[in-house]
Image (cartoon, rainbow, N blue to C red):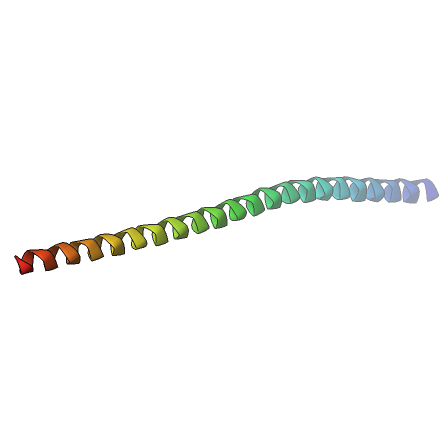
Length: 79
């Protein structure tokens, strides 16, 4: 009788070990995925900053062109 109880206990311990091993593997996969996603977020933030900087530069250029155009139109009206 005690042998049967011991075998059941051994089986449950083995199941627990298998479950723990699978969970550890899943944790490692999730850690890797988390690292990858964190890198993607960082890259996206950098791209956004770059685009905002470029947008500001283009707005400055547009403003410069508008000023030059206004100056040219002013000269044409004088003539």
